Image (cartoon, rainbow, N blue to C red; front, side, top):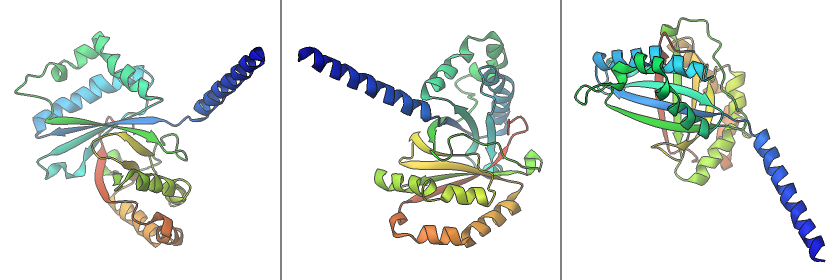
Length: 262
């Protein structure tokens, strides 16, 4: 009897382990890291541009990260708090830590990054930096490169952050994007979305973020007009189960740098 019990427990343990491994294998959703650099003037901007273009991006490319996006907020010309965004897709959260450690040991990285790394305390390359970690949505497990024809300096990338009042309402909004069909609507209307993801660590939670891209601002406005007038969106947004699931929206218009991968 005792031997049979041990065999049963062994079988259940093995079955549970195999099931967990299968689930992990099926979940191939990417993680994303967004670093937001706040800076004040052209001097800091120059140091950041040089660092990203000549040190960080080449180093990330060597580690296998080929799609690094670097963007500047369109409001930078008039804003005192100017912003630069660095977007990086990774396979896991462990990879974020691994990649952060790898460049430090590379002499070519150290040489290219010395202006940034060795900046004096009274002449820093930025005013403040923040990191946002995200996990891709189930129905948008991988990022997509935009299919745009315009020059980079004409493009508009729209980064949206949707906060919810509670975790339950946040889960509801994520469901609205996935099972509810919001992602499918964006795709049908050709919004050229880069990613859709839940924020797993950041200063504003619970929330989700996504990025769409357009040829120019006129193209952006036309797409959102079509979205607002679409019958599917009108029906979806009026459903009782999806009411009040967003408490605050932040919209940031961005433009890719010349050296951005997309």
